[in-house]
Image 1 (cartoon, helix red, strand yellow):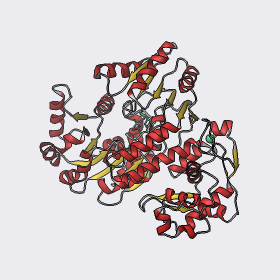
Image 2: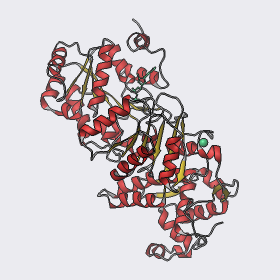
Image 3: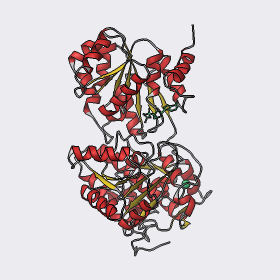
Image 4: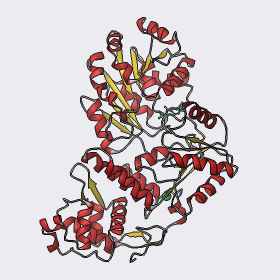
Length: 522
Ligand code: ADP
Ligand code: ZN
C-alpha cells in the first residue's frame, strides 16, 4: 500500500504542476489525509486552496467546498478542470447546462470537488442529494465569515456545522481563513466544529511589503508623490468615503496618472469595467473604498496607499496584503490624522452592536493606532499583535528612518503602577482618570483617589496618556483582556520595567504627530 502523503506529493507535480509544497501546506495536507479536523489560518496568497484540493483528489469520495465568492469558485473549477480534475459548482449564475452536467457527475459518483455557496448548501434538496453522495470532506473557505466579530459576517455560515451533520454524520471538516486575530479564531472553532480541531497558523509576515505610516500633512500632495514614485505600476489607493474616491481619481487623472474609481455606489457595469481594466492592464491606479477587496486576484499590485486611516488593524493587514502577492517587493503607505482617529472611534461607539463587540472593535482600532505611533519597527509591532515574535525588519519607515524618542521609563512605570494598584481590574479610561487625578464617580466609588498614584500623571493630557498606553501595549508591556471588560494587566516584560530592571523608549510625538500640539512634552 502506498503512503498517502507520497501519493499527494506525486499529485502535486502531475496535477498541479508545482515543484514543492509551500510552507505549511504539507503539514495540513497530512493532517487532512489522516482524518483530522483542521483549522488553517494562513495569509492571503499562501496557497490555502491546495490544502483541501490535494486531499480531495488523493482520496476517494466527494469534497464539498463552501465559499461565498462565486467568481473565485468559478476560477477554481476552471483551473481544476484544465488539470483534468472532475470539479464543478452549483449556483444560479451558472450557464444553462452546467448545473445539469454537475448533477450528472454527482449522481454517477465521479465528481471529486463540488463548490457551493452556503445558501445553496442550505437548500433541503441539496442536503438530501448530498446525504446520498459519499461526501468525505467539507472545506469551508473564508471561515471568518462565521464570526460576528469579523467584517464579513454571513449568517448563513452559522448553519454549516449542523448541515455537515445532516450530510455526513461526523463529516470531516477543514476551515480556512486569512483572518488571524484571537476572537475570530475562537468563534470559528466554536461555531464550525463539534470538538477542538487541529489548528495550523502560518506566519503573517509578508517581508516583501514595505510598511510606512505618515501623519496627514496636505494629504493629496502626499498621495500624489507616493503614486508618482510608482509610475507605470498597478496600485490601489483606499479612501474612507465614496466622494473622496471619485475626487481623488479626478485629481490623479489631472496629474496624468491613469486612475479609476471603485465603490459600491457606482453602477455594477462601471464597477466591473473598472475592475477588469485594473486586472488586465498595467499601471492602472484604482481609487477605491473597501468595497474593492475580497476576490481581487492580481499578483502584481505594486503598491497600496491608505489615503485615510483604515477601520482597524485587521482591515489594514488585509488591505495592504493585496500588494505584492507575487512575492516581489511592494510598497505601502498609510496616512492618518486626528480626524480619522475620531471618526473611527465614533463609528464604533455609534454602531448598533453589543458591548462585547464594541470592546473588540476598540481594541482592534487601538492596535492600529499603536502601529501608527509605534516607537519601534512597524513589522515587529504588527506581528506582536498577531502573536508572533520577530526581529526589526529593515523594511519599514521606522527601521529605515527612525523616529525621535525619549526615555519613557518613568511614564511607563506610572501607568503600570496605576494598573497594578487597582488590582489589574480596570479599563484604560479609569486608569487614566487616576493618573490625571480626576475625582470621577468610579474613582470615588473605589476610593482610588487615596492611591499613591492618584494624580502622578497630571503633567500630561488624557490624549497623551492614551497614546502612551497604546505604545506600552505595542511594546508588549501591558495587555488587555477582552473577555473581562477590557481590563489591563502588566506582562512579564512590563514587570521588568516596573521594577526598574529595564528601560524603554517612547515616541516623542506621542499624541499629536505634526499638527502643532500645544501640550507639555517630557
Ligand atoms: P489563498 O487561498 O491562500 O489566498 P491560493 O490557494 O489562491 O491562496 O493560492 C495562491 C497562489 O499560489 C495560486 O496561484 C496557487 O496556484 C499558487 N500555489 C499554491 N500552492 C503552490 C505551491 N505549492 N507551489 C507553487 N504555487 C502554489
Ligand atoms: Zn521594521
